Length: 178
Image (cartoon, rainbow, N blue to C red; front, side, top):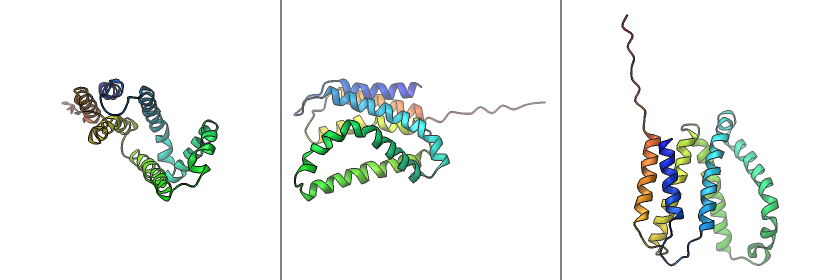
C-alpha cells in the first residue's frame, strides 16, 4: 500500500506542479490523465478473472464493443464533424491514425492482457504511474518544457513506490521441533 501511495504521490506531483517552457500547462489535461490512470487500474483489476477464463482476443472484442457503445453518445457529433472525415485528408494523417490505433492501442491492450496472466493487476497498473515521467522526459527533450527541481522529486517518488510494490517479501521458515 505504501508503494502505491508513493507512486500516486509522484504522479500527482509531476502533473499538478506548474512547468516552465514553451507550452502552457493544462490542468484539465493533467486531471484527465490522472482519472484515466485510476480507471485503467480498475480495469486491470476487473478484467483479470476474464483473462484467465477466456482467450485474450475474445476479451478484447467484448471490451472494445462495450467501450464503443459507452463512448459513442459522447463523441459521435465531434467525430462526424472532424476535418479528417469531412475533407480530403493527406495519406500521412491516415497512416498516423492507423499507427496509433494498431500499435499504441490494440497491441498495447493485448500485451496488457497477456501480462495479467503472469503478474498482478496492481503491478501492471504501476507502469501507468511512469507515464507522466515519460511525458516530462519527452517534453524536456523536445524543448517544450524546462527541467526543474520537481521532476527528479516526482521520479524518486514514483520509482520508490514501484520498487516497494515489486519487492519480494521474505518468507520466514517455521521449523517444528517435536
